[in-house]
Image (tube, rainbow over all chains, first blue to last red; front, top):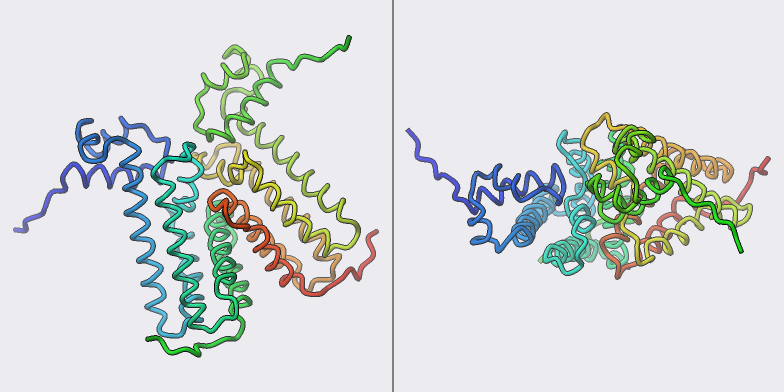
Length: 195
Length: 195
């Protein structure tokens, strides 16, 4: 016999909102969220102050998970920053081919949250900044002459893969992006030792 | 005194749907559409068979306009296919900086229309194929050794620009993409005369 911790209303709301906002979009109704999470309306307001707060928290959790996934992907690829960066595109190739892939959560959020002051925007902006920092750090390790600009370029390719993966399931946008990434990185190998 | 043709219910519905689905998303309600177009519900069914048909027609009209915009942009850039292709990125730089730019209409549609059999998907798919053909034709004129693959790459950059433009208004994704496009095109100049 095992003892399982039953998730509380806060966790159930987060989980339901994570699934439903990705699958159906940010416009998913509060009633549908409450029903799926099986919680009372009061809980939503107690824990998140309302739907906007819940959505911001969903984005915050997803961003932390996704950032960790990038880091794990790079870590699994070893020490060479060139291999670590290219591994991102191999991994994205798998991500966009998952049957429930529905495009980039953060792009969808920025488009759907029409109020520029919605707290979700600060979360997505910070996520992209952290991703940029992550890429730029590897590019510095690679002794790339323009790590900031190359990070811009890689981020643009990542955006392109996530868009293409959502709209052209028959094509392989990640493989296309990987070829371009190889050009961006050139034939550089690690020159700086990781501290 | 001028005589103006007053748009009929069909045109008013199309115009309202074009604006509202772009601004508020595909989830915009039928009532809001009817109110904005100032038409009776009956007209929606008479002219489009319902909201799905209206949306498919909006996508069809938008795609025709956008394809024409690509063509005009290239035409204005002269005869050299390299300049014609790079002009696309200069133009996209202007598009994403327009105050009412809200990302790629077709990506948003594919994400929002969760029914894979929605007639809108065939329209967006055809639009991307035509864009690919447009790019590939120029690349052939440029005598590019891999015009199909290079067209995939340029299309990925276009997706990246439209995504980046919607989420990072402070950056200049089109300039980033243009640099990559220059690498894709290499230093090729027109070798084949346009017939």
